[in-house]
Image (cartoon, rainbow, N blue to C red; front, side):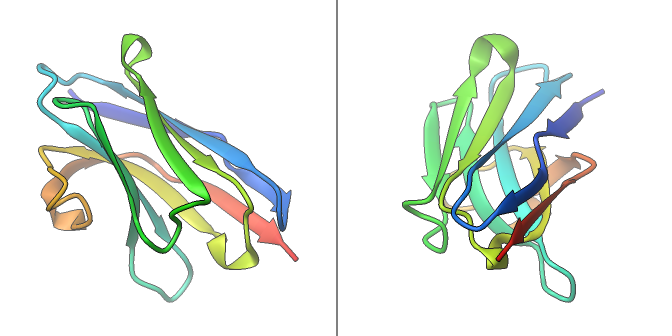
Amino acid sequence: EVQLVESGGGLVQAGGSLRLSCAASGFTSDDYGIGWFRQAPGKERQAVACFTRFDGRTYVDDSVKGRFTVSADNAKNTVYLQMDSLKPEDTAIYYCAGGWVSGATYHRPSEYDYWGQGTQVTVSS
């Protein structure tokens, strides 16, 4: 059974940083990707970034490029989302998701089969 466990959310002032972690377990091969999504109240779930384990590539959405970085520690089966220069509009619940995705499909929530429980990120002005 695949499990994804997020951690690292919290309250931070604008301009601050947070690092989210997504610990994955249960995948039977390395042929998967871990995506990061966020959802603010009243808004659709938005893709933020992705790490594809099978080729080690990373993708970051243009809306957060330059501020957010995705990385992974394969030995720990953990994917990280480093968020710098945070803005109040980054406030949302952040989810990690697992599935068989590529650079062309990572931004589609429907491509993922497994989701973490979500972690709240609140950026105060």
